Image 1 (cartoon, rainbow, N blue to C red):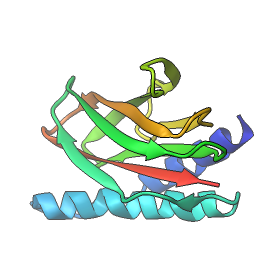
Image 2: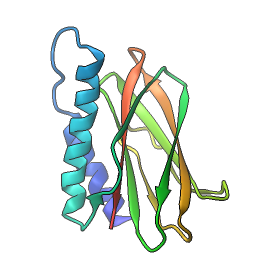
Image 3: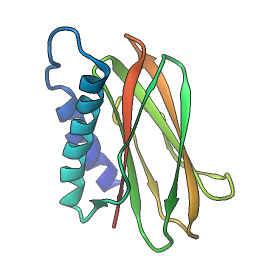
Length: 148
């Protein structure tokens, strides 16, 4: 819980940074999300984590969901971090194990969710990304998977 709390404070500080003014193309919004994930990764590195998978980015309208699947290894501890662009004020994550059982979720009213996984078996895990509040559709989001 301490690790999650430390990350939430760091992510909140990052998300308060001013956005670039003017019309922005999709690539600029995606770059914004990637930058936030790099900053989150720098914070997690202080606690022994490293990026273990490619960053996944996508776009969702308000109220929509997406599913991201990836392989996790037994014996590791993972922090799966979500971030979204400045038009998003609430993003949620839920992670499911290889059998489809929910193992963690973050549905707090924030735009920097984080879920934890300590796999009991190696296999495909699924994260459902929910865009709970997006003011200018579509909102870009990113998922970073950090392990140790």
